[in-house]
Length: 264
Length: 302
Ligand SMILES: Nc1ncnc2c1ncn2[C@@H]1O[C@H](COP(=O)(O)OP(=O)(O)O)[C@@H](O)[C@H]1O
Ligand SMILES: [Mg+2]
Image 1: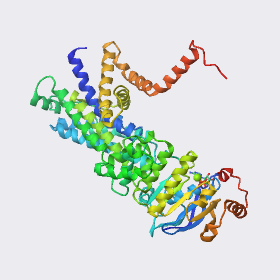
Image 2: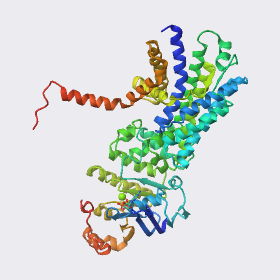
Image 3: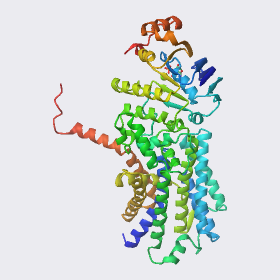
Image 4: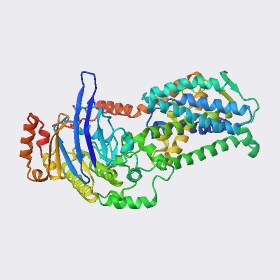
């Protein structure tokens, strides 16, 4: 489904701040595979996502999505096949527009920006049904501005918007990290349901080691712009958080300084 | 203020309201500080007067609208394709338009329409009476508000509004935000130019310098409208913007009546906008001072 070959990304080339954030990364995802991504701060996880989604151009390598070479496609074009949810709940929605309007925009993903009505009665009914599945009561607040919602409600909404038109690939970048634990749990559960029901090919960054093993079927670990670990199948089924940490320290040659990762 | 003067003030307020609608689109909806306005306003006026001179006032309005759209696209091009900051892009376009406007006016700094027909004189022939200008201006604005409202509720309109809120989200939804910015700035300046075009026919006169400070006046109208008439719904906001423009004209008319020299008008406009924009900060300062010097005892500390 997704294939990265030798993808590299360097920031501030030629300056003293030059930073190779991705170093010849290879990665291949099967259709419907749900992969969790872990790694310390600055390992290059977000950069990997931003290169796949086209927010950054890469200087070498190739990105293939479902047989299409999207390496040089502008961000907005590949967005038609890629759903994204960021860590920051403010990034996924238009705050001064209503829930209904936000969802209507998402429902029209891939369609031309033309003079058809932005939202129709028929759409509203369908969107309400989809919202009801989130079980947050948002279906009764269709005319409320998104700016009025809590962070958790917004992330759930963003998740729905990212998958309303089925994407070929779903990218989740620590999308529950900014939420209260109880809501974070709820959004993670929603994520699992959506991904499983639609059988979405998914990459999910998480700082929670336990979650990285609980969700999905495969876990990759990044360090210093490289994928240093890729566990799946039997190896993953028997993996524990302790073993994972030990493996990380052995392979990266550094202690896992980042206690944010160990928590919870 | 005489009754005649009140009607005249309304006429001006409504005509300038068209410009305020355009600036509402760029500054508020698209969230972009677009300074093209001072130039595109005159572009509209110049096109309008030149065509009225040859007996085509209505065509003058239409072409002014289109020319304004082109002016907005210059700024959009500088901003999106050449990555120049929005403010600077607008200033550059404004500067370039000054020369272009002079060219449209065949190098003359001002042109007066002497007994050539304008949309106002033609309309007066049809319905007659003292209110024909007011009626025509109101009809045009009403029409524009409705079109504007319908447009903002199309899919393209939604995407334009979302671009102002969160352009990242719009790209994530598969839409090119360069495109929405072109459309937004184009329409905004088309409205501004149409305003200049109507005003030029209204006063039968165009001056290449008449655009100076227009963006500030339009912004003042938008802010006054929002504060006084509310922002609870989109339709209400659009009417508020036009009514804000009328209120602004009344402030100016009253200030002139009270003896303010006309030379000081721009100073006053700048002050109004500065005060209106900084109102929340000023209020905060005021509250802090009030707390500091309030005679009541502060709450007992732990
Ligand atoms: N826009 C940017 N400009 C410059 N450096 C960046 C930028 N984004 C990320 N980096 C650098 O690239 C490295 C990887 O960052 P990132 O991908 O955000 O890490 P992670 O998401 O794994 O914490 C870091 O050293 C970071 O400072
Ligand atoms: Mg990150």
